[in-house]
Image (cartoon, rainbow, N blue to C red; front, side, top):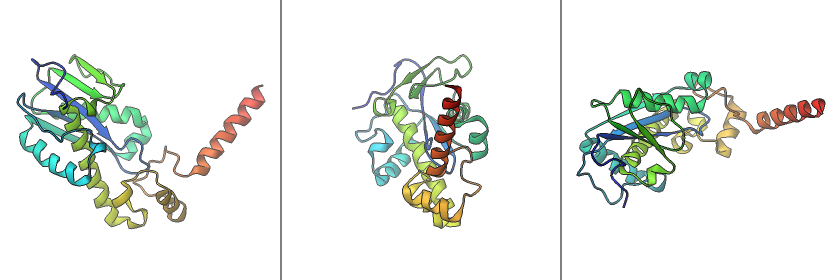
Length: 210
């Protein structure tokens, strides 16, 4: 059973993101404040749940949370400030969008930038340890999946309905065949050849210096 939160006597939000490793689409962040009496036996890390379970829990979280906010950080910002900063920015925007400001922030992972003067704690694999982080992971995942499924209708050749923008072999082959779209992250290595070329250039540079 996951713990409710880190500080039992503070109004505490959990925050998480989804889509950091994707080649296309936004990175999506969520922040959630759950009531002190919240419990659910199946709520855990979104990656451990089926799509059906995630959607069921999404409804429960939205109904029972004190407040929540989900935001997308789009591809142009990701390309401009890099994916880590975009993820942290998304979390900040989600926290900012809460109808009640938290007194403490619990973050999934090991990286965060201070949000104002609110104290915080990073928790590695926190979405499998705390209910509010797990709830944030589920909202971030379901909202992003819904966004990519809608994009699939416009660009079915990339099969985003299934791969959600992640770098599957079929997704990369579609990029090779059809090129990239405005929804692809231009700062990412969309094709393996790009990575191989970068490695060769790096190796050549090192050899010259030696």
